[in-house]
Length: 253
Image 1 (cartoon, one colour):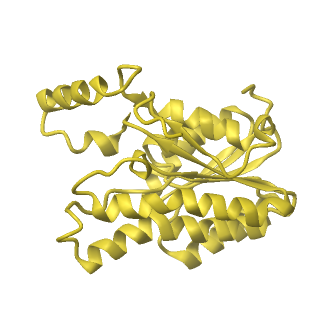
Image 2 (cartoon, rainbow, N blue to C red):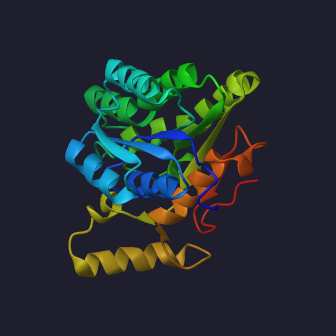
């Protein structure tokens, strides 16, 4: 990608306050886009915007508040006159536990954050993309591999590829491309939050790395670069695809 690839484009990134979302917002800005950085932590979103440069701004947004998502998209199109890229990055492990014990509230929360917000974010974005555009949904390595103890996270995340494929067929005639990025083991604040201490962190990273052909965890910027590619004209004939950024840890046929 060159800095001019997204010149004149307007992008929205959810979950831009940290991790993959922050890296994506910064990468889109470096590629020339005007970027609206959103996060439920408004201060973190604004900090990302400061790092992304003058063409970015940060906004508080809870992606589970569907009227707020619609209002955000309306505000962006009113302010800039267009919306070209919508990166659905926001997601979270809202609870832990197996399918056998997950509560209704825990499951509903997981679905709201990790799937429902993407469905209606896509809906709002598509309605605003009068010139065509690119929607990129960020999934998870759990779309390919069962992970015990993450029922409220992994089951909703498994719906992201199907959402992506369905929308790609429905929106293709309008010139809107829809793709997904499925990150593998990426070192972010979300993954790091589960380490007990430095020794535990080293042990987990070593164990994970041993199962990855490239022999190491990924970095948020490596996922972000794929989102930028899918957002730009270099991916003009790519839609309905799930791009796995996982160091080779999973290689589905």
